[in-house]
Length: 101
View (tube, rainbow, N blue to C red):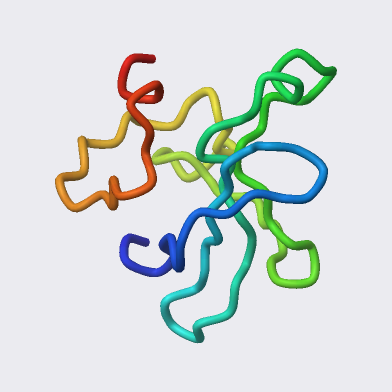
């Protein structure tokens, strides 16, 4: 559902690396449910990682299997439809380097 989870607050960095992060929260209750790696730092990109840039706090969310439009098969990431470009995206913490990518 749209308008239920969104970015909140400003971008931040951790003490252990220079990845640029931004929290994501439930817009219904206001709880932070995870964060998005807006811009990974070079050491993290070069290290062994799973390529995921959306991290959810296990105590804040739980997973469920969703069905595809047929209502029979489990919906898989690789089969998700493309989203239309959003015109209301907050670009205040996107660097020039990210625009070039």
